[in-house]
Amino acid sequence: MPADMVPFRPGLENVEAAKSAVSEIDGKRAVLEYRGIAVETLAKESGYEETAWLLMKGDLPTQRQLAEFDLELRSKRAVHFKLKDLLKCLPASAHPMDALQSATAALGAFYPCRTVSDPAKNWDAAVRLTAALPTLVAAFARVRRGEEVLDPRSDLDHAANFYYMLFGKEPTPAARKVLDACLILHAEHNMNASTFTARVVGSSLANPYAVISAAVGSLAGPLHGGANEECLNQLEQIGSPAGVQGWLDAKVAKDPKFKVMGLGHRVYKVKDPRATVLQEFAEQMFAETSRPKNYETALELERVCAGVYGAKGVYPNVDFYSGVVYQALGIPTDVFTPIFAIGRVAGWLAHWLEQLQGNRIFRPEQEYTGKANVAYVPLEKRP
Ligand code: ACO
Image (cartoon, rainbow, N blue to C red):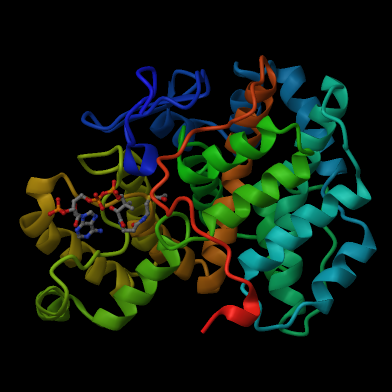
């Protein structure tokens, strides 16, 4: 290995891959800040539109900037009718994340931004992506059930309009607030796998639609965004709080390295602050109705797992409670990760815009472990 080569770190753990001013995490103190502002404050005091501006522009907007940005977002929610046709062509059994990834890449064909040298065009694409992702997610959720696609409504805010496009009715104020908070809590999380993907793709000066569709693909995996779906399936499998201990014992007996979905994080070694604030919102929501069984099961699972995995710093991450909240809102399980993407798009775009400032293409090294000097044997002489 050459002297100046950094030793191999599986998963690039602790390797700095970029300089970034977008967000900061202190995994030991459960701190997450977007542009220096605590995520808990944003979830409680701000709205998704304002948080998206903060992430992408670097500072909170003025009243006028926010009003103009909001208007711009509302004007870019509708998508070309052929994009809806494209979604109709996909099998109804397709996973909504696959549909979203395809439709996001296709957006770039209808609203091209082939070169990324014009900041005004880049901003235009960033606003369109933020505005249109909810439309694409809601459209596929409906067409696969044979339902009519609903046009976005410009009299509703970002979260309320998404809910409307999904269900054909306006959310209650409590449901709108919890959905808005979920989008804020998922909006950014520094150098996670999907954001790194966005930066890598962006570093080749690929168009922003290619950047975001690649990030959607990365988010889909069960070790990343897909965990919220898996987490709810796991709660359904456990069935009730009384079933937790037996379920865990059986899983660990079969595989000592078994991973409980919704637990653990590369950075947090305490409970994820997003899980804590999401739980507060969940409690408020359930106070108006009743606590769902899955929530009671999740509480017991958290309690039991703290005893088993707490010493390793493995605690609930944001996905531990998000699935229970989405289920209570009536959202289908396989639409949970697309909602994560609808929130995270602001963070991906903030990193993409940052990456373009002083860009250098990502080109890491590898440690070759393959064969050398292998003779080519003609096909007819091979056994
Ligand atoms: N359940 C049980 N044990 C766990 C879990 C878990 N969910 N997560 C980590 N551990 C244990 C590991 O077995 C390992 O134990 P060991 O030291 O005895 O071998 C130790 O904790 C360290 O775990 P790693 O897998 O090395 O941690 P890593 O940082 O590589 O992985 C990850 C982080 C992928 C999130 C992991 O915790 C995991 O798979 N969790 C479940 C999936 C999940 O919830 N993903 C969502 C992540 S958050 C997000 O994307 C929004």
